[in-house]
Image (cartoon, rainbow, N blue to C red; front, side):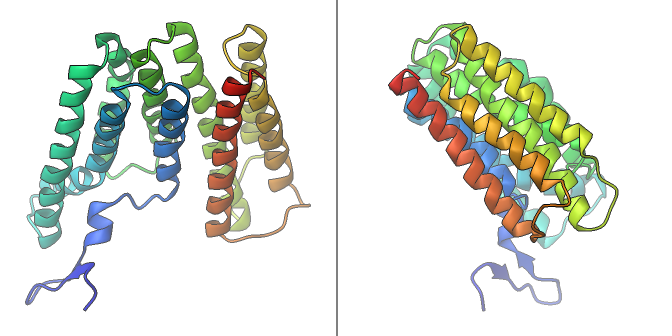
Length: 272
């Protein structure tokens, strides 16, 4: 028997992977893009603890979603028990990261997290209502989790202006990509889709990055990647696109995200 499945006599099997880890594969990119960029650009003694804190908060969401959903339905299933166990485990990880962050980071480092706390509450609400796939919930989630890069920068003593500019760069990468992927998947499935919305979002993101670079709040190199992302959205939603499966679209987004993070890191260190 696979170790990822628990067989309970007379009851359905519990797939631990779906209980313990987010089912949305793209969410891992949302988690690690700001963390990797933040640690690389603004390393500090508090960085590992902030990373642990954020990862713990990220992992809590999936089991909490199951526990809240089952609680609302007035049931306690084998999956609920497993989810509660993972919830406690992740809460410990979160707590250790929080203690380390409080001990080593500047108090101001929590400002980005305080700003997004209502967004996090909204996400939890959507999860409890089984509406986590709503577009607004996904966008709010992207903005929330990308706050980690601002917290890492502030912990390293960076000015608020640049710290929040970093946050804007990551959010400007994630939000248009969410819109693109949703519409690209609908296009491939023959469903109603929009070209205007995702392409317009990419254009706005490119303009924002141009302005940040012009005013010295961001390096210029990411502009190249945002231009590539814009072209990707135009071609990917056109009749000239190559039809691909959802998994390949997801892998492509991971690659684009990694290259965007790399352009940000190289841009800061090389001064371009």
